[in-house]
Length: 330
Image (cartoon, rainbow, N blue to C red):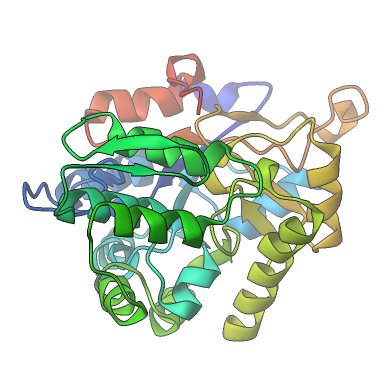
C-alpha cells in the first residue's frame, strides 16, 4: 500500500457489501447475501482507515472529470438497502471514521416488499410441499430438498427477459403451499429492509445515497419502458426523499453494460453520470492529459466483491495488488 502511492497511474478500488450479520443456522433468508460479520466488517474498515483514503461520490465524480485522487483511494459501498446497513454498519462506519455509499433499490423500501431473491429463499425454507411443478415462465419441477434449487430459481429471475416476477413468485408459493399476502410480506420486509427514515439517517450521518434501480431487475432483461421505470423512478424517489441529487447507479446484479448502447442511452436520459458494476475489478484513472488516448468510461466503473470467507490478509491484498482480486463471472 505504501508503494502504491508512487504508482504513475492511480488505482481506485471500490469494495461492495450488502448485508452485515453474524452466522445463524436458523436464518430463513438467502445465506449468501451477508458478506461479513460485524467484527469482521470492523476489522476490514480499520484496515482501510489505516492504509487507504476513503472517498465518496463527490470525489469519484471529480476524478472522472479529470481531478486527481488522494493517495490509495478506496470506496466502501453497500447494495440493496438491508436494515443492517443502518443498525449494524452505520455505527461501525462512524466509529472508525469511514464514509460509505449506499445504493438503494427503492421499490422495496417504499412499498415494503421483500427482495425477490429473499422471497425465493423463504419460500423454499417454508414449503409445506416437498415437490411440485410450475408452468411459468417455463414448465419446471421444483424439489425443496434439491440443494441447487435456490440458485436455479434466482438465475431464472436474473436471465429471463420480460419476466413478471410477481406472477412467478406467487405461482411458486402456490405450488409449494406457502401462505403469502401483502401483510405477511410487509412484516417480513420491516424486519429485513430499511425504511426511508433509516435511509435519511444514513444521509444525515454524512453517507452517500445513490440508486440501485427500483425493483432490482437485471437491466439487460428489460424492454425500453421497463428500463425507464427501473432507472428513472428510483432516482426520482431518492431525490424526493433526501432532497439531494442522485448521480450514480449501481447495476442490479452488477453485470457490466459497457457495450450495451441501449442501456447506456437510457441511463444518460435518466440523469445518471456514473454507473457501477460489481465483481469486475479495479479502476485505472489515467491523468487528464492521457484521457484522449485512454478514456475513462463513466458507465463502466468497476468494483470488488467481498465475502465472509475472505480473511483479512486477502481483503487488503486485493486492494493493494489489484491482480489478486478474484472475479466472479456473474
